[in-house]
Length: 214
Image (cartoon, rainbow, N blue to C red; front, top):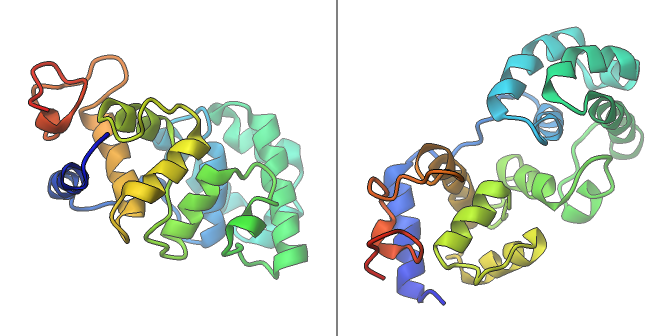
């Protein structure tokens, strides 16, 4: 169990190391972020950012996505993997957004979860990045790995349980940015296979780092 002081220090060091807590996915319209997150499942953000410019040029409006064939959308997103399922979700999602939400991305967890291919991770990202909910908690693989290594979630592996735990312990107004910084830290330092513990700003606060001082 981490103390409140330790948690605050973890948050502070991440803020210092990664001052720009931003989503790596590139988008201009709210629904574009929603679609980009769907494409990022089992795919890198870098790959998604390579694919989406041509996709959004071909389908420049939500209406054009709603009228698109799944097969044509699939051609543009083929390299993202699972392209048939993702194409189906994107087209159906566009139709639902127009039919049920006036073309607007919903601003509540309940309504977001009604959209095809949207789970709590995606919904929290939308709430945090589009609707500025600073307490939204995005639990991805980096978050699961690193919060366990730091001892923040006591060995939990279930994303929903981790989300609820982080909501309890993170300082108010810090969660959304914390999760973005955890992703940046997971890519740059605390990788899955070979974490750079020696060069980690959180080493002295980590339960699993070799030579940690906790």
